[in-house]
Image (cartoon, rainbow, N blue to C red):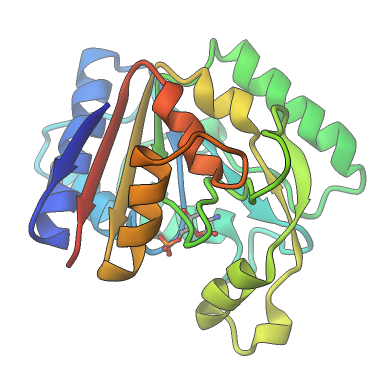
Length: 236
Ligand code: GLP
């Protein structure tokens, strides 16, 4: 594991964007696994800056997102599809037909999950997976559990996750209680994993996840077994 501690969120974002853009420059038709939440906002802004400066071309890239709330369609301003369109995709030249986010409004959730795993497989797996981390150690929406769930699946969100994400909604009652998330297989078979975490509040879970016991009670701890993991953390 390459654990990088930086001083500011600005620096974290610049380093993460540099790693992702280097991946795209090295392999223009790569598959990027992307994340939502507040942590990657700076990274996405820096990627857009690099695109505007002509440093990187996303036209051949495919993107596969980690998760989506069940019940929110892509027009809902708290859906992860909406987040990706507005915070990254519309600022770069990715082909929208090559951007994938689980369909939170699918009539058949089970079939959608299965198709998502097929998609990851058919793309040849993910080249670089970007992750954030929840306060309970979740990655994507893989919540603490008795075992690591491998496949893309529907998950009931922990009340602590609902509390944490309520800040984005008009009220806590508006936060969906279930989501579709990529499972550990999709994440762990990515060739590279880049996890970013910022804020003093994340310090304890970052220590547990990367320097503690590997356990499904702390889902991100499985990443200690990944052969090419970079973690960037700042207290800022
Ligand atoms: C959400 C997302 C995760 C994300 C986490 C942390 O629950 N599903 O992918 O990593 O929140 O979010 P933040 O970066 O806002 O702390």
